[in-house]
Length: 596
Image: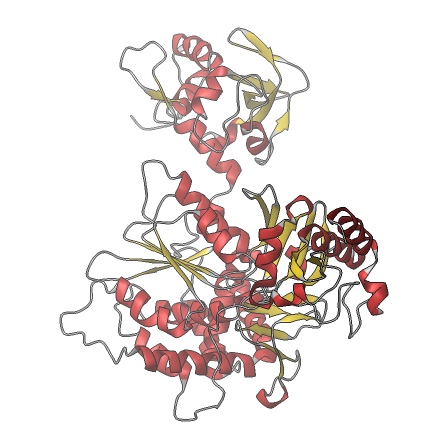
């Protein structure tokens, strides 16, 4: 046969539907998968936009744009099972004598794309479950250890009734293959009480709040082992100066406990963490996250913990122009000598565990990695066996914390930590008096994590009022709050009042009375206010409505202006803040009956 006739024959062969010849048809049966030849090691999952999804021959999830179905990409998906391609008549290339001389990537690529089309739309972020713990659709606990997927029923989880599957596609979800890690103990060892052993070990360290901090650390370790399946994923910040044993605790105790089921990084970025996590729910330990001159990198890492706490979704692009979704469900632990400054919502999602210097006579217990891996495996088994008790135990602590005056966020945070520690110690059957004692030691008024927490709107007002101004550049710096007090007539000096009103007007502020109630009017857009809020979360580009108006507008009694007001050269609409919210300074006049 001539070369030209061979090309024609090849073209005709490539036009024949592979599934029809082999009885496939495009269904999902024992013989073929969505029209691909029976036994194909690459499994099509579906598509989303331009991207096609596959499980490759190694069980890994592959995302491939339609235009990238080229030779090397296809070769990578088939991997060590690539001989399958040469066993398909439609996919090989032959010479005039009929001998196989190669394979036809354009044909294989077409068939793969068709198969994904038959599979339909598929959302990788919602349907992919890599290593870690997951909550099943019916409330069951699912533990993916890389080489196996263990499923435990929601209401009764005896070890013997577990289901075990190899990684793959089942139950409507993809469980990609991964490195084996974090396998629970196969045999319950009655001689090892993992919760008690770990609590005794943690109490060796000199915690600032004593055994309360040790209890919270035990709670984080327990929560992190099954964090992906929990309603709330708590975060902790381990802090202390040199000589406190912080590094020993992290690297020689906590890391071996997780037996590979922990992402341990230092001096990292948010992008590295979420790209490493992918669709895993593994806990994350970020070491040496110290304050910097520019804390934007630090805050982007902390933001991940905030998203992960409630299981948020985030999307990013890749260098292959593929949109990738991440659903973060990991417990985070940070550590540093100094804790970076952060907003109240971020700080209130943390349990701050501070270490003092170890006592000179402190002798650390047995820290052999093999012993700690055994304790970790036994602890995982205990958590699994008591899975039905975990939710009620956390809810019990959550209720006690709210009764003690904590808001819902603090109750979620500390309720999960105390509840998980209780399950580790007692199997989820807390002593009521002991539970109340633990909660009583976490007082909202003295809690370092939340005692300084103020709302965004009050924080915005405080920033505005505390900003120092020197309008005439004479070295006489007064805060905005002082100038407002002068402009409001909270001083007997009339000249000061007139001068102060002129000053605050140049910064987008003025005193306005509605009825008999005085207000501080704050312009929606003003260059003076842009300078005050520069490099803050309330900053806004010139010519746009200031973000500060959104925050200040949430203050109690605040209202929007009905009409534009004059502010030092311009007319602008404003948000009206009750003047009662502006503290009076020492510049205010004394009451008439005051004693000299």
